[in-house]
Length: 247
Image 1 (cartoon, rainbow, N blue to C red):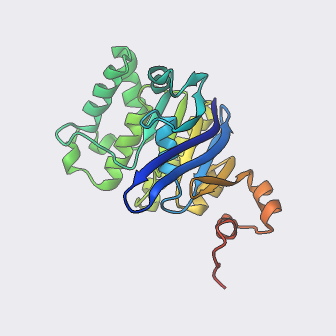
Image 2 (image 1 turned 180 degrees about the vertical axis):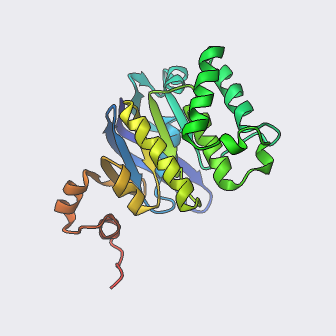
């Protein structure tokens, strides 16, 4: 459902000159698959996700989402995806329920269907206790659940999730992980970026590691273990980046 081929994005920096944030990146993601995209800070992960989501235009290369080209059919691509960014961007004076209604209507979800979906998502993400509380009164975990609910409300076939459990406590992270596994079981195609190695190892069917915008490796955990001789994803990650591991 996602095909990325030789994707590049360069920026001009006064001090560093031309910076290749994404450099000849290629990968594919299938229906019903969670594909982990890992890398250190500044590796190009968020830029790659913004390119696939049509928020940025590539310098060269191509990508398609559910058959639609990110450059020539960007409006169609946006209808296929739910994109969770690091900036939640919630409207402070709206409640989570109102946010779901607002974004559902923007996506032209029929009113009865929108009402049903909102109730279902609020229940699945354990949001009942704060669904009618203004967003500026919510904790960070509540806000993150609201942002994920907004990502799901139009029932997109493709989910692009940039660090969905960052800075969350374990119980809240577990609820979000369950919702992601439910989305996989329903056949959604999911790209998942995280810095939490244990989470990626638990959730992802295949994992790609990128650094300096370039793909270092991609495969299942068994394939990554065979390629590096390491067992834990943490050690595999450090090996690929040529960083020392703990004794």
